[in-house]
Length: 270
Image (cartoon, rainbow, N blue to C red):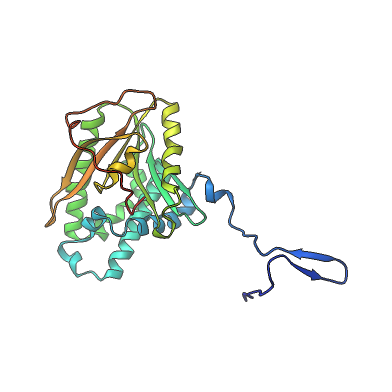
C-alpha cells in the first residue's frame, strides 16, 4: 500500500463538481479517550504493553539484576534487551490471565499491572499460558538462581509478613515510557485503582525499586513500611515496601515508623 503525504493545509476548502467540502486533516484514528482515560487491556495487547514497560524499566536496578551475572555477562546488549522485553511481556500476559492490566495514553504510554484481592499468578496454568515458564530456560544459570531462589521467595515472604491475612490490591508494576513522562499518566493509573480499593475498604501494597519513589507514592497515601534487598550480585539491590490504607482509615504503623521519609521526587519510571 502506498502512503501519500498530503501537503494540503488544514481545513483547506476543496472544490468538486458536485459540492464544496472542508477537508480536516486534524482527525486521527487513535481514540481521543485514550489520552485521558484509564482502560483495561486484554491478551491481544500484551505485546504493546510489554514493550512500553520494557522502555519504562530499561534502567531499573531489579531488571538489570536478573540479566547480569554469570554467562549473561557475555550477552550482547541486543540479546539482553530482547530478553527484557520478553520478561515484561510475560508479566503483562500473566496479569491479563489472573489479574488486571490498565493503561493510558495513545500508545500504551503508561501501564500498570495489578493483582486484586485473593488473586495470584503462581498457579501452573497461569505460568504456562502466559509464557512465564520459558524464563527458566531463557535466563542464564545465575539469572535463574536470582529469580527463583532470591527474588520470588523474598517477595512472597515479605508480603506475608507485612500484610498477614489481609486481602489487598497489589501494584506489581507501573511505568511510563520516557517519551510520555510528565503528563500525569501514572497518577491516573494509581488513583483509578485506589478509588476501587477505597470503595471496597481494601489496602494497597507495592514494592519500589528506588528510594526516590517513596515521596512520589506518599502523594497517593502510601506509607513506607520496610526495606528488603537482593544480595546475589556485587551490589545489593533494594526494594522499598509501601502500603496504602483505605481512605478514611488510620495508617497502620510498623516498627519502622521512625524511619525518615525522603523528599518528594518523581522517578524516571513514573
